[in-house]
Image 1 (cartoon, rainbow, N blue to C red):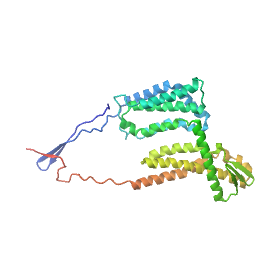
Image 2 (image 1 turned 45 degrees about the vertical axis):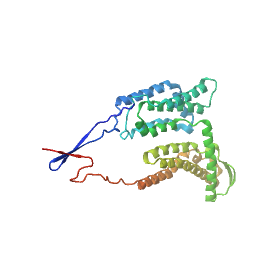
Image 3 (image 1 turned 30 degrees about the vertical axis):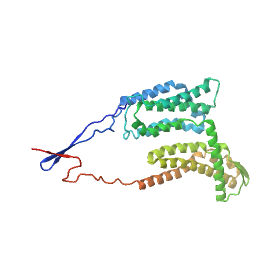
Image 4 (image 1 turned 90 degrees about the vertical axis):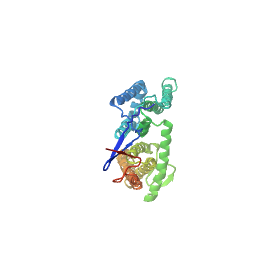
Length: 345
């Protein structure tokens, strides 16, 4: 049962010179009572109780990024999610449920992930730190979604879908997925690096991930896969696509494009370092460009990212069809369809 508010209205038109027209409008069945501040505080209290119950896995999750640089961005995800919901608060049709809602699916998922976390911690089946925090963070996110399902109307949840699902970026990738992503980016970067070497005419001999250059041999190691900046670029593109693009297909295309941009960025970085080693000396492999140059190349990767976002946004604006004029608009001196004349004395 939903808490939906509506009201009946009656429209009256005076027909010149001595007639009056009136029509009964149907109740507005889509109008919703706005959520009061007390309702939002109640939702916040439920989230607070959830975090209190899950305080141990929550603290483990909060400590995780300080010891794992690759996914250090996860602490920012809840704040970004809240911001994405807040900026659209005036457009959201807020409504609170009067029943329990369909929260059991997310609730069962939260319990299952929590059970995996407990087993890994106290039942003699220890997991790697990354995997344990994957279970803990997934349990918390599923718990938040269960609370939201039990509190807000379906129409409200539909408009909050992206900010809520965005919370899954706060779940650290499990170790096997992280390793697979690193290896995939490693080999893809090596392929694109070979293309750059051929394009620039830099002489080399290649054997898999190893490149023999004049005076130095380099290897595209797993640590040089660029996964950290690629993940940050992926999260950034997901939020930017939600803010600036309308069509879901364009949003998905934009997010996927950042993976290709991340690979090209990393290959370009390897090419620059290799060129410096050949032209200046092998000692450049230990230069600041290699050790601390990541933010510079990340900033360069933002240029094609923003450009592609601009092109998609421009394409959407051109493909947007103009709204046709209403065909049943009342002309001067005519009655609207369905109205009835009422004689006045």
